Amino acid sequence: MAVVPRLFIDAALGKGAEIALEKDQAHYLVNVMRRKDGDPVRVFNGKDGEWRAEVAQATKRAATIKLAEQTRPQHAPPDLWLLFAPVKKSRTDFIVEKATELGAARIAPVFTRYTNSERVRMDRMEALAREAAEQTERLDLPDIAEARTLDQTLDGWDAARPLIYCDEGGEVPPMLKALGGLETGKLAVLIGPEGGFSEDERARLKSLDFVRPVSLGPRILRADTAAAAALALIQSAWGDWD
Ligand code: SAH
Image 1 (cartoon, helix red, strand yellow):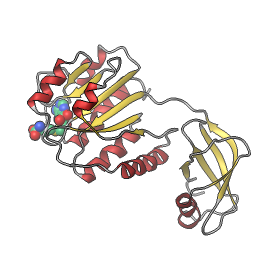
Image 2 (cartoon, helix red, strand yellow; image 1 turned 120 degrees about the vertical axis):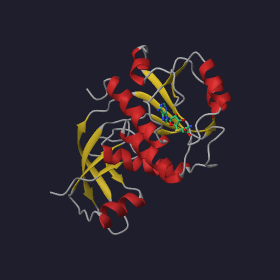
Image 3 (tube, protein in one colour; image 1 turned 90 degrees about the vertical axis):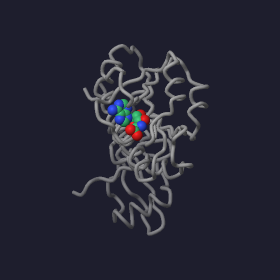
């Protein structure tokens, strides 16, 4: 049997519910995946766990699904945020997709002094995150935050959430050592742009008591590599992978 399609549905999920699919999802299911009435589908909505359903009333332009049973209970993902300075489009796409696969609860673009891309496409990031969440079998979607400057982000920061600041400048503890000292269920990681952080930004970050500068090793990683590496280290150290 071919792989059972898995879709994020923005509707309440309950036994016997019949849900009309959005146009693009109906098109994908019926015309791309060529699913017919009675074929199985897996759905999740970020709140009610994952459900087995079956296609109903499939036509070229529309389809509904009929829910059968819950196959996975809902559980909250680790409360881990990724803040990153947007880089060129393909690499920003990569960051959004990998952060979703690695379980980030929030993905927040942050404009810094040397950020070299002047705008980010929220709709593009949301679409990438949704596809990645469906593929990676998450039970929720990451929250895609509005783009803000580093100063705006730091000004309004909840000091109860430590901010791991990945600093390629050296003389800072390695990630695992920095994590060792943190007793918390919530965390954020900050990755800079291709040009790195400015001296002012470094000084401001190091002056904040909720900030933990960390090293990701002796080599200079591209921002997209650094984002994936940092999240992987944290998820593994925090037990998300146990
Ligand atoms: N300023 C650097 C490049 C920055 S790399 C230069 O031009 O040499 C982009 C971002 O990835 C950095 O701002 C940092 O957040 C992260 N990063 C890359 N390598 C790192 C390392 N070895 N340790 C910690 N962070 C790193």
